[in-house]
Image: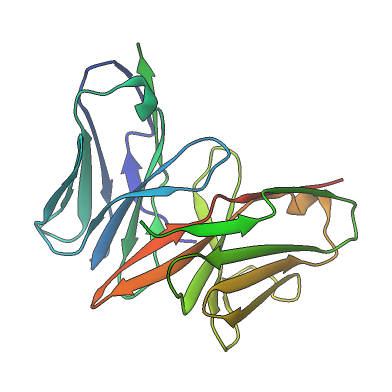
Length: 110
Length: 117
């Protein structure tokens, strides 16, 4: 199936550093969702975005819906070891059927 | 937040047998649920869209007779892997669509790991 381009694919960072990742698409999306998945578990919803330009925070996480509606960004501030996991973006070009990014694997060095 | 459960969380079966996986939305009604398959270190691949009271919609390349989906109520969808073979071993994850006005999100279950011997 179709997938979004998500980058970076993986990253190692020092504890306390800020993290940025993004997803881009050739299609316009109406909704962007960001999830975190830990090994052996299902993805957990972090942030949902519904309007172009929208900026939404959830604790140390901030995500933005790109104004072109073809991209979205997720930032994690002051990373901690429990931020380890795989982060997925998901975009919906229409209603309800989402396309998932390839994931960003985050590893935090204490 | 919305809660979606899956049962069983893991299952081991012999080749040729059928396995049923349940997906329940615990605190909201979901007319639409989704079934995904995930291989190690890969993203989620949509298998089918489960619609309450109607036939499921399968993605290209997914055998509908192999992966039977039933969405008999607003809180329950089941995926049955029929005549399972080792290549069907995977992590299966369901999600449920929740709407609030014009906004919608998907909430995922914890996944079911299937191992076919």
